[in-house]
Structure formats: structure tokens, C-alpha cells
Image (cartoon, rainbow, N blue to C red; front, side, top):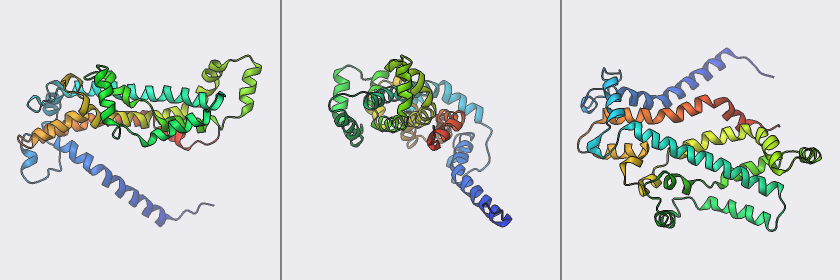
Length: 282
């Protein structure tokens, strides 16, 4: 039974509004800072109203960037980040779906051993094995390339584990019915498993896209050509240069533009994302 208490609802709404304001205030400050004139943000007072240089600042960063900081235009870096994030996301999803399908529906020697071998790799992220991974990528000639940015980050034990757990909840009767209808393994995977996994795929897509978009250490290590800079490492270079020649109004413009793609992905896939995380019955 749900009780309706006006004071309780009012208190709950006030707490929620306060929480949202607390979370959004830094975002608002970044947006306000991106609209200020050069030097306005460094006078010792924090402007709380937008300035009149928004179009100028955003156009400068989109078209030319901070060349003295070694950062290319933000538009180019956003493209590089988008290619890297999509390659990592789609690669992780394809490999995880196929590996989970093989582990659950095929009988082969040491099947459980291989699953736990994949699972153990959770304890070996790229940051732990970064030196041998860099050596392999360098030997294969993949430095300063999109392949080098994305391939070492594609394998995912987490996604494999989640898909395995989901496939194990699918009734055996579906598999038997598919066999009776003459469906082979690939047809069963394409026509039955994939449609049933849409919400899980969507939820993982959002998580993995943000993971790929926010990568910093690996792109910083293997790219020396500015044509392959991602937006996250580009912002870092801008802030380093800002220590000597502060241009925070331009840096904040780049930060706002860098935050837009992940926000749009979440907004467009919000319904599937929530459904994929909470749905238990198929």
C-alpha cells in the first residue's frame, strides 16, 4: 500500500531538486565559463551569468583549436574519439556475444576452464599490462592509428560474463523448438538470441561507449601524431598550456563540446538502457 503524505512528497522533491542542483552546478559553471571573454575567468571572481562570447569561443575551438598547446581543432578530435569509442563498443559487443554463445550452447573440452580463463582477465586491465601491450602494438606498426587506439581495448570479460548469465536464463525449450524447425546454431543465434538480447545490448552499448569515449592513458601513450588525438587527451594538453598562457574560456568550450556525444547517447537510449539494467523476465 502506498501512502500519500503531502509533506513527505514535498520533502522528497526538495531533496531531489537540491541533489540535481548540486550535480548540475559544475556543468553550469563550465558552460558559463565557455561564454566569457579572454581573462574574464581569471579576475578572481566567478561569473554566474553567461557572457557574450559564446559563438566566438566555440567557433575558434571547432575550427582551429589551441594550436599553441599542440591541440588540433575540437571537431577533428571529436571525430577521432567517436571512431575509437564506436570501434571499442561494437568490437566488445560482437566478441562478447559470440564467446558467451559458444560457452553456453556448445559442448567442448575444458569449456568451464576457458570461461574462467576469460573471467580472470578482469584482473588484467590495460593499465596493468600496458608495457607488453604497447610493445605488441609497436611491433605490429599500429602506433598512431585507429586500430592501435581501439583493438587492445576490445576484449571484454565483463560483457562476456553478463551475456553468459543472460543466455543461461533462456529456456531449453526454445533451443529444442529451433532444432525441431531445422534451425542451425547461427540461425538460432540470429533469429532468437539476438532479438531477446536487444535491451541487454543497448544497456551495454551505453556503458561501453562512455568507457571508450573517456579513455585517456592508452591514447596518450600510443599517439604522437596530432591527427589521432582524442578529445580527452586534447583537453589535457590545453590545460597544461593554460598554466603558462591561461585561456580557460576556450578550454571550457572544448569541455562542453566533449561532453555532448555521451550525453546524447544516454538521452536517445535512456529507455532501453534502464530496461536492460532492470528487466528480469523474458
